[in-house]
Amino acid sequence: VLLGVGGTATLFAVLYGGAVAYAGDGVPRGTTVRGVDIGGLSPQEAERKLVERLGPRASEPMTVQVGDARLRLDPKRAGLGFDPRGTVVAAGTRSLNPIKLFGSLFGGGREIAPKITVAEEQLRASLELVAEQVAERPREGSITFRDGTPKAVMPREGRTVDIVAAEQAIRAGYLSPEGITLPTVVAKPKVTREEVERAMKEFAEPAVSGPVVVSVEGKKARLPVRTFAKHLSMVPDAQGRLQPKLAAVELYADAEEVLDPLQEKPQDATFKIVGGRPTVVPSKAGKVIKPTELAESVLAVLPKRTGRTAVVQLHPEQPKLTTEEAKSLGVKEVIGTWTTHYVPAPYKNVNIHRAADLIRGSVILPGEEWSLNKTVGERTAANGFVKGLIINDGRLYEDYGGGTSAVATTTFNAAFFSGVKILEFHPHSFYISIYPEGREATVAWPYKDLRFRNTLDSAIVIDTSYTNSSVTVTFWGTKEYQVQAGKSPRRNIRQPREIVDDSVNCANQNPQPGFEVDVYRLLHKDGHLVKRETYHVKYNPADKITCKRPERSRQRR
Image (cartoon, rainbow, N blue to C red; front, side, top):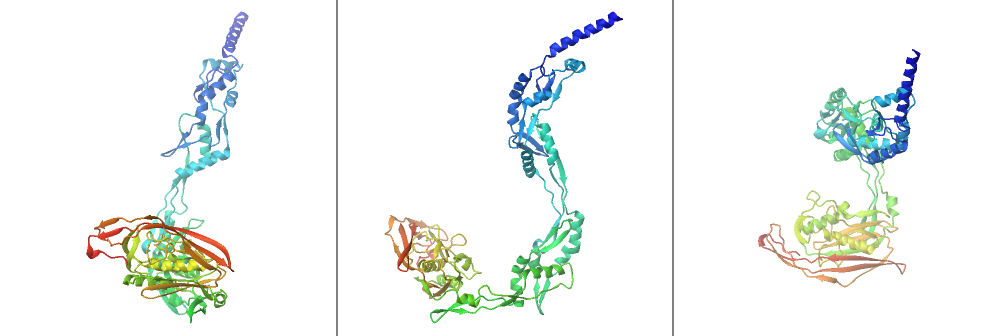
């Protein structure tokens, strides 16, 4: 027995010694990292092999899958890094434990996870960006009121990335040759189907069942459904319950014309030229409906199908410009004026007179900006304009507002000689001889405007007058500058072409050479030159255009 035991021990010792010798001092045999075998290698050899095989993969974009979407994630931006040395240390070296030692020789291999470095904030930020790109946001239940008819929008679940679980998936899958699937969670809407059905029955349907009567101190006005319904909405509160909301300012703006007979609007002080001098027309205080109170009162009666009368009060409101303020604005003398003479035509008289009427009485306080387009509005039939000849791309065409540029040019010159700052003006594409060279302006809704800023110490009041062949614009205020104008000789003169046109909208056009010119103004104050301004203007040639259809042609005048 002793011999048998001794022999077995001797055999074990021989085998153990051989195993120790075979295993060596390196990484245990059968060890792999992301499929890379480093078993039996020394720590230095194992580290070099990991750098060679996994190093490139560590910096390559990772493929992440979220549902049906596949995206690329940059490891560096995500704060991920590979630690080869730490991985080898974690793999360890051969063990002297017989069980582990023989297991490494005769058992299967062991796969160990790579050691990685993670910048937590960068990884979370990258995953949040991925979540934004692929998120299926829940659709909240709601009710819309387009065309005065309530429409239920039923809720729908969404899906988003589970950031915490996704971080774990990224850590576990980094350096894997396969893509990483990011876990998602269901995003539930706050507003349920049952809540939409309740809100529809209790509020939305009764809300549009008929008009609302607004009552103010015994006077009444009727608001049709279409006036208030388009400003209705239903928004969820913190508990997911739909609450009605009525946009106060928008409702008041739409209903203002209907409500005007119930109110007394305040009137700003204005100026009127009497006996050749500006006179203040006194302001007047008013009593008006407050938009917020109107919205609250209307909203309160909308759940009712009968008795839909919203009672509101009038509140005092002062004018924006009082009589006393107007008298202190320094409007006392002419600071700039200009007259433009033109060949009369029915369309010109209508459009020029209408534009002049609309800008008359404009009050521009010190520092304020004035715009012709904003003051006159779009040139349409509804705004009092008719069709006439306009210049478009160097050609004469027919459209609404033809002739308005005569008012723009006249206003430009009045501003020019008042000394105010010109912010925007656009000369015509070709020169029109009734205007001073370079000192003229065309306008087109909405992209070409005439704008200036009142840089004077006094306010400016614009006055206009006209005949059937002239228009005059005068600026009143306190004169600060003596303005001297001049211009350079024409240069770069270019001759027009001759064109025969058979289009339906053709208009005959007289030729005019193109040229460039500089205009300047010198601003003097108290006898001293304080500023010189130069404007460079380029005119294209006006081609000679002959229409083949004489009955449709029009001669430019």
